[in-house]
Length: 192
Image (cartoon, rainbow, N blue to C red):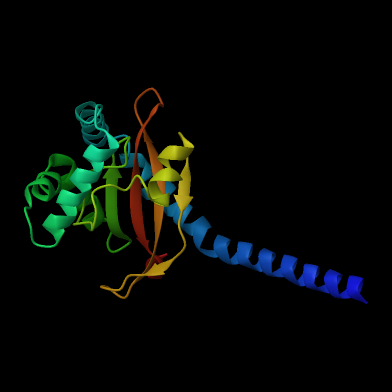
């Protein structure tokens, strides 16, 4: 009797895992297809590659305490403090490029965050709550996984827009194929 109950529970558990995997595929496959067709082509644009390389060189000697201090400054700026770092990032050439890519997407792309090899913001289409993404799955499961990595996060409802979106994160590589950073693209699921 116990063995039959265990077997029934095991089969039910496997069925729910299979259903969960199928449900995941319901949003993952179209997002990956969208990214492959509409985002991947501009990830090797010289404005993207040079911005990431320049920041990697400028940040090569940063320690974790330096990163934490920069992130703290950014967060203070978000809360109304000094906006110097925020203005530098949002006003740079690659952020202007990313803003145009988001605009050109006709509502498909909700956000874009370009990161260096430490997970620090290089450029973005809009203000983020923090400067350091290196402690988050979007960076760890893209840049941390190496060239060719694509991580599609679970769908979430954006509280400010009430939009259902998912974030796709990819490793950015240089001309030689070496990983140099990462990018996160928010995709509007109602448009997929």
